[in-house]
Image (tube, rainbow, N blue to C red; front, side, top):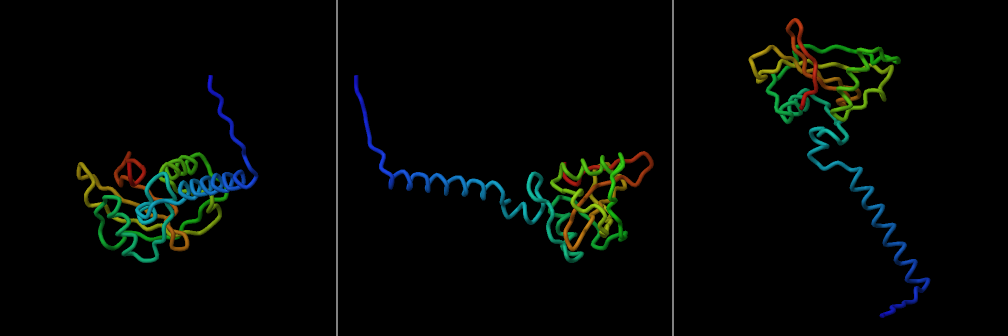
Length: 157
């Protein structure tokens, strides 16, 4: 039988606790900060709200998601995010949450919705993409069919 013993001194204990604390803080910071690609294109599972101050930025964002769009929006309008969400808006929020957007944070705020024509959607369907922007940040995005009985879904599946 072999017995091993060691003496733990107070100084060594403080050094070990400090190293453990640094390791935990480093892991938390690494876990919370998205990689640069996520900051640029709103990769899902990370913070999706990115700055889009100009039309060129919005077009580049959509191209980064794989969509070819006309360089100018086909529509631009102010929208008010309601204070209370009905069942339709709750469903829309679920689509946004799947993409990393937190629309609930903007209840009661006025935002701008930019609509672009998608030129590379499969099946040659007439599809539009909407970006909802608040203070130069994209806070919601969706693809929607312009046809009767169409669809609304995330911009990236």
